[in-house]
Image 1 (spheres, helix red, strand yellow):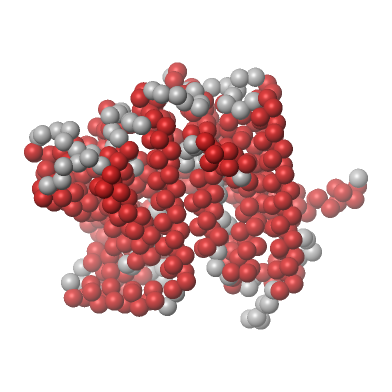
Image 2 (tube, chains in turn orange, red):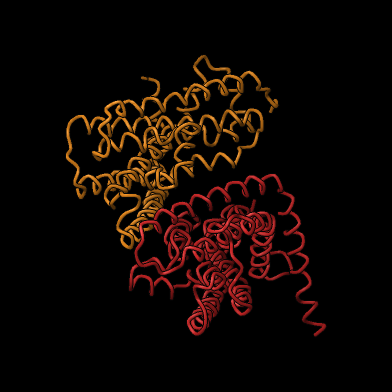
Length: 258
Length: 273
C-alpha cells in the first residue's frame, strides 16, 4: 500500500507538468458524459417513464454505472493499454521485479485525467439523489456505496480480461469493447429496459445487472427482498474466471526479446 | 478537359493507394462489425422500451430502426471522433516538411486521404451489417426507402455529408497547427458535435427550439440528414431546404479550413533535425 501511494504521488507530479492538457481532458470527459446525460434527458422529457422508471430513477442507474466505470478507469487503466506493454517489452521488466505483476501494472498508470467523468458522475448522482423521491436510510446509502465499489471492481476485471487475452493475440480485441464501453453506454438505463433476454445475459454471462439493476430495486422500494443486498458481492465472482485467464496468459507468455 | 484530368490524376492515385491500404485490415473490420451490430441492437431495444411506454413520437418505430441500422453501417463515414494519428503527428513532430516538399496541394492531398480512409472503412463494414439488418424479422428490420426520390436524396446527402465530415476533420487538423495539441478541438468534436449530428439521439427527439438550432447547425448535415431522408422521416420541401443548408455549410467549412491552412503554411517553422 505504501508503495502504491508512492506511485500515486509520482503520477500526480507527472500530471502537474502538463496542466493545460489535464484541464482540457477533464473538460472533454465532462462534455462527453454530459452529452450522454442530455440524450437521456431528451428521451425522458418526451416519454416521461421507461419500463416504469422515472427520470430521476434512471439518473441513479446512470450515475452508478458511470461512477463505477470512472473509478475503474482511474485505477486500472494500465490494463487497458496492456497490448503496447507487451509489444514494447515493458512486461519483461515487470516480470523481473520482485513484486506482484498485477500490482505493478495497476501502479504503472493512474489516470487522474479521468477526473472529468468522475465529476460528471458525482454531479449526476447528486441530482438523482436530490430530485428523486427515495426514502434514504443508512442501509440504502451503504448499499449504494457497495454497488459502486463492486461495479468498479467489475469494470476493472473486464480490463484485466482484455489484457489477459492480449497474451494470446498480442493485439487487443476490439470485441471486448462491447462489454467495457458498451457496459458504460448501456448502463445509462436500468438493464431491464433491453428486455428479459438481455437482462438474463447481463445477469449470468456478464454479471453487470448484479450491481447495477437488482440492488437498485431495493433502493427504489420496488422490491422487499433483502437478499438483494448481497447481489453486488456476487458480481465479484466474475473475478475468478478472469484470474484463471490471467494466470494462463502469464504462463503462455513468451517475450519477443526486444 | 485533358488538363483537368491531369490535375486530378495524382489525387485519384492517392485515393486508390489509401483505399487499398485501409482495406487490408479485415480482422479489425470483423471485430468492428460485431461491435456495431451489438450496439445497434441494444440501441433499438432501448427505443422499443420507450415506444412501449407510448406517447407522441416524432418518428415511427420503423424509421428509428432504419436510422439506427444505417448509423451503425456507415459509422466510419460519419463518426466525428476519428482522426488520422499520422497527420496529427506529422504536424506536431515536424514531418510536415516532407509533405510540403511534395508537388501536390497539401489541402487536397489530406482531403483525399481523409475521404479514402473513411470510404474504405465504411465499405468493409457496411455490407454485412446492411445485409443482416435487411433480413431481420419484422419490427427490427431495416426497411427499404419509401420511394425512389428518398433513395436518391439519401445518396446525394450522404456524399455531401461525407464531404462536410472531411471539411470538419480538415479544420481540426489545421487548428492543430496553431494549438500544437489536438485534444481541445478534438474533444469538442467528439462530444458536442456528435450530439448535434444526431449520433446520441436522433434530432427529432430534441425538444422544441433546441431541435431547430441543432437541425440548422453544420453538424446536422453529417448523419442526421441522409439517414432521416432514407427512413422517410424527412421529405419534400423540408428535406430540400435542409440539403441547401448542408451545401451552405460545406462551402463555409471548406473556405475556412483551406483559408486557415494557407495562413498556417506561411507560419510553419520546421526546426531542422
